[in-house]
Length: 130
Image 1 (cartoon, rainbow, N blue to C red):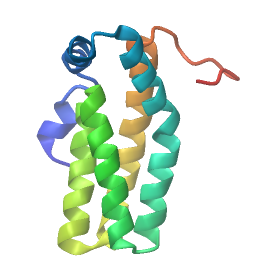
Image 2: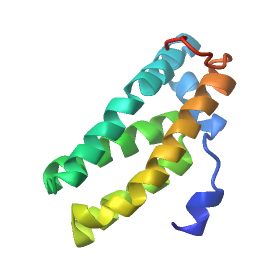
Image 3: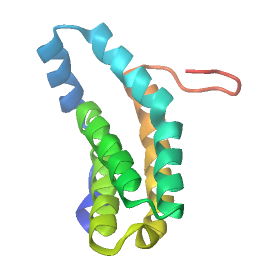
Image 4: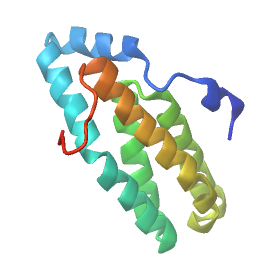
């Protein structure tokens, strides 16, 4: 992993503040964050499926989709790892990206937790759906 990615913050709150200012709506950004959280598992599963099936186009599409969503919510570390996965797929093919899936998962889960706890203001408890 690139050292800069590993030390970058999970979430840059300034990105969310800028998005709120652009949309003139805290509620709209909150809904976007909720959607990001709800879609995380599916996005990760789609990347894994495409990587394990060696489907280059699908793997790139799924990775680019995740990277774009991360950039919108300020998920800097996850966006960086997604960019690494994308580069590996482009240069070497999906089989070589398998080694980065664990980092992607761990960062994604940590990002979701931070967004839920810090931005939305409530921790997930067992049985709570968001």
